[in-house]
Image 1 (tube, rainbow, N blue to C red):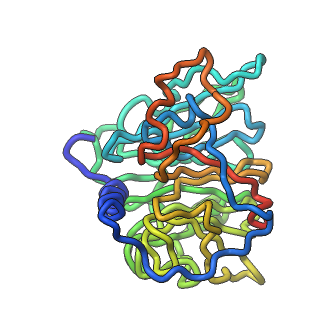
Image 2: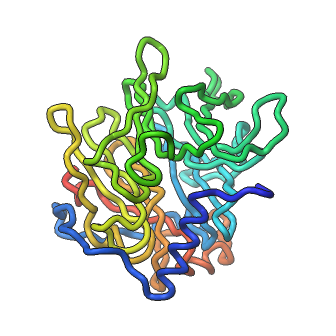
Image 3: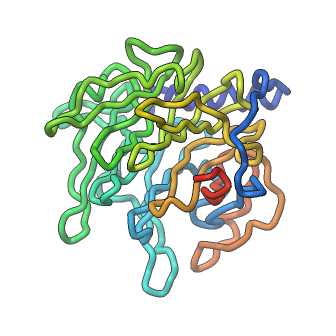
Length: 329
């Protein structure tokens, strides 16, 4: 991504520098109640999804046999999407670039609940343009009847603003599209928005309001298929623990409840973000820059490559997971 900088990458680099200098977030507020008796996530996917590179975001197909995941450069400025599939022998295939994401910078994959379409962000140009673009837009790619990827398409206005970034698109079962971004009407920096799907068209994005958004940056929503809860990342909120933290809000009688920080263990003084929930609703996956020195657990690389795990815990992004039951969900 020569000649341009990702706002998210710049914020992350600043946060890591501040944490290294001993700076921390504001006053920690009461965290979300821990329902599971423990809030200790496990490192996940050593050798494949967690490698010591900057690993982030995992998107599972509904049958959980296909995974799209992201990997960034050391400055978190250029993003690459990979795809792996579960073989009949029970191993994950060697990661490849999906057909729709072989060029430019691509990130933040999210499958639609029906598994037919993946939404992602990209700085690629549209046909006829000279790339890359100066901002990230939301794109979509669908699977054909044979399970092969079709060409990606850029979502139209009013979803995308060609002069501003959109982040982490997540789609509910009714087609409503949630995403992060800066645009007119923000409460702070980046806010979370929803563009409702009505009569086959996206409507102008609506700010999710002060129960969700704050005076700082909210970036990455993950919406439940039925829209009953929302998990999102935010940077240095007053009720955070450090860098990026994960928060949850529930929808009650059509309104979002005030967001609460997920429990310590999920959140740390490091950055915890880039999250998703498995299609069966059983697992929360997220990336963390926390240190790690223990046993990496089950290996996902076949054949095994020990060099693929040597950098785990070095402070970039490693993938973790925790049962959703620990959150009462």
